[in-house]
View 1: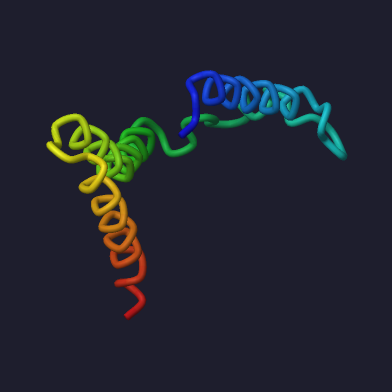
View 2: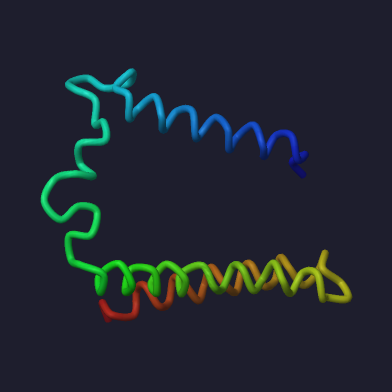
Length: 102
């Protein structure tokens, strides 16, 4: 698949592009800058409770894919089992996202 160098370069490019956007090099109007961190209650607009609850949602959201990676290291036949698990995760996420609309 991808070499470690390609993954490292991709991460570095994302960081550089993000910094360029903050500094306004890609902006059409004015740079976003760091001013949003000092306005009102930012970055804790809802207080510590909101920050904690957001962290819980983020942790829950990535739990399935993280466990799939751990299972890959413990599986006897990861070449067969990991693609099957990836397809199951896709369908499970699709089900849980779409089920409230039924």
